[in-house]
Length: 381
Image 1 (tube, rainbow, N blue to C red):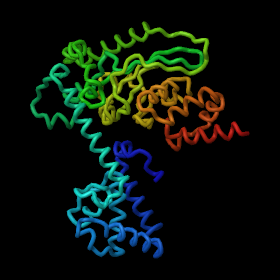
Image 2: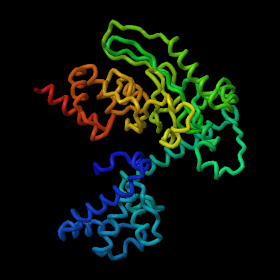
Image 3: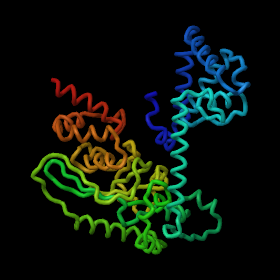
C-alpha cells in the first residue's frame, strides 16, 4: 500500500498501528465485501492449505469469517505488527511464510529462497565471530546506580551515548568527478556500527582501539572528531577535472556490500554511518554533536530527518548529488544510479522539476520516481 512507504519510519513516528488498521479495513471492504472475490480467495486458501503436511492446517474447514481474520493477520504480519495468537492462525501464517520443518510441499522457488536465507544467516554469524576476534575486540566500562532507570533518560544512559560516538578514522573513502569537479567523501562509523556484521573486522586496528580508549569525556571526544575530520577534509585533493563525465573510485572500503544503516550528513564530504535505530529524535537531542547533524537517510534513501531545507542537487542536503553517489557505492540502489544519470544528462530539467516539487509524497528518494516522470515528460515536450 502507498500509505506505508517505509515501515521503519512509521514505527519511529508511532503511526504504524493506525495505518495498518486502515489497510485491514480497506482490504475487508474491497476484497471481502463482495461475495465473488471473497469466495475466490477462500478457495485459493483452501487449495493451498490442503497441500500442507500439518494436519491441523490441511484438514481445517476455512469459513468466511476465518478468511476475514486470516487476511487481517496477513496484513499485520507483512508490516511486522502481528503477535502470536496461539491458535490455528499461527499455523496458517507459518505455512504461508514458508517457515516450517517440512519443505516437501513448498515450491522449488520458495525452497531456494529459504536456503539462501539460511546461508545468509550463517554468513552473518561467521562475520560477527570474525569481528569479535580478540585482536578486533573493543572494551568499554560504564558504572551507574540502576541501568534500567538510566535507559529511560538518554541523558543518563552513558552506555548508549558511547555507542553513538563517531570514530574519526574513516571506514569508507571514495573520490568522484562530476560536472568538471573532483571531490572526496569520507564516511565515519559510530561505535555501535563497529559491533555489526556490516564491517570488515580489520578496520578495528590498534589506532581505532587507542582512539576509543579516550572516549570517557564525550564532549571532548566529539570536539576532537570535528577537528580531525575537518582538517582531513582540507588536506584531501579536491580540484577540477577537464573531463565532464562522471567517474568514481573507492579508495578505502571497511564496509561490506549492501549494509543496513542510518547515514548522517555533517557537511559535504563528511558523513557518519550508524545502525538503523540510531539518530532518532530522542537520541539526537542529547547527542554531543546534535547541532552538527544536518540530515539523515537510511540505506534505501528515505529521509529520517532534515535541517537543511535544501532542494537542490548541488547544495548539501537530502537531494545533494554527492549523497546519491555514496548510496550507489554502498547499496547499489538502482534509483541512485538513475539520479546520477539524470544529473549528468538532464540536470537543468531535473532542477526545475525539483523546485516545483512540494514534497507531499516525501523527501529524498521517495520523491524521485515522481520527478523522473516529470523530467521525462519535459524531455518529450
